Length: 478
Image 1 (cartoon, rainbow, N blue to C red):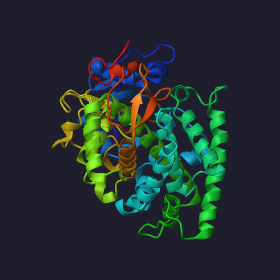
Image 2 (image 1 turned 90 degrees about the vertical axis):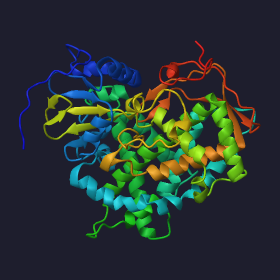
Image 3 (image 1 turned 120 degrees about the horizontal axis):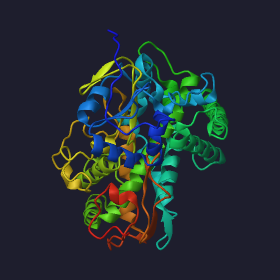
Image 4 (image 1 turned 180 degrees about the vertical axis):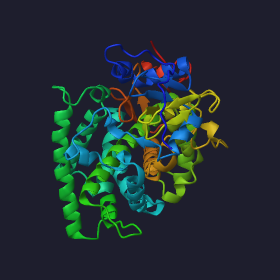
């Protein structure tokens, strides 16, 4: 039943008198993580961002996560900020953006059903050998004594995995060009500043994004046509999506394939690369944990890459990954828009309200995770939080379809890197979290490559990382 809701005052930062809600979000665009932490600690689990239409608010914690993430009918996604930055419906930007993350209602359910077989555990397991071969190729270029930007290395690794498993493309000019187009378009789409500026304002990234989307669409449509012409014979995601049929015999159209493959690249490549980067940083700063993890990997694997079965017999590796994803969840902020009036806590809120939810903040609630800013993999011995208290891949009917794929990729890479090399952060390096599409290290993560000699230690580190993680005593320099 539809009903009207009177304007409601929710405590929160004062909107700008001229810019309104856009002015209120400027601090969020400048420092999303700091803004969220300050808002939660000052105002609590519900924070108002606007006092007039459109209603915008923050909501933190398992109770609010459950209400909103479990109800895909009343709360729709707003992937990419299209509500505040609309794009022409009949455009390349609209088509490449029209994947699962941007779909709602029956369309989302129908498309997700079609795509699920591509990410069934058995299908994902079939990518293990491809992942191992690509990880090995990347690591074969590393030499003891050299300095490498590990954030960039992990991005290159997961880009290659994404291109190979999505399209059967690898180290070719075509693959490099398509990968670079994907990366450039994502940088524009998820720039906080770009998301706040009107798309018609001269000098914004809207024009460049449109041109990039057009080129991406041409490339992907050519790959689809090529794959259809060749028929069976490829074991990649695109091939399984082309072959997918639902119970009514429906299949994905070429327009839908364009949108879904772009979305899968965006969600998978960025998520895994940043999860790997943060985990390697956390292990460097916790040498005792790293030593124990190396012992486990050596005893079970003896230098080899894990098989699918062995991944299930590495409990410390599993706990390390869980704890890293808790502390630094790649998808740190998720957005929903209400389709009808609803109640949140003591507030009656209208349709068309925008709600920002944050796994990053939920994962730092001490009542859920004691000493929440400490890296303690041992906390996962027997700990089983609700799916709305621990949600690095989202929760509810929109939970990330590629969770199994991402976890296998992350664990394989960590197991192979740690057995072969000891990575040490450069002393005095600056580490600043930066939230764009995912939570990443601003400016990269410089590390020294050593042969695995078990000389584990840690170096002081500068930067805003000290505000979000309790690093060991003496690990943070001014």
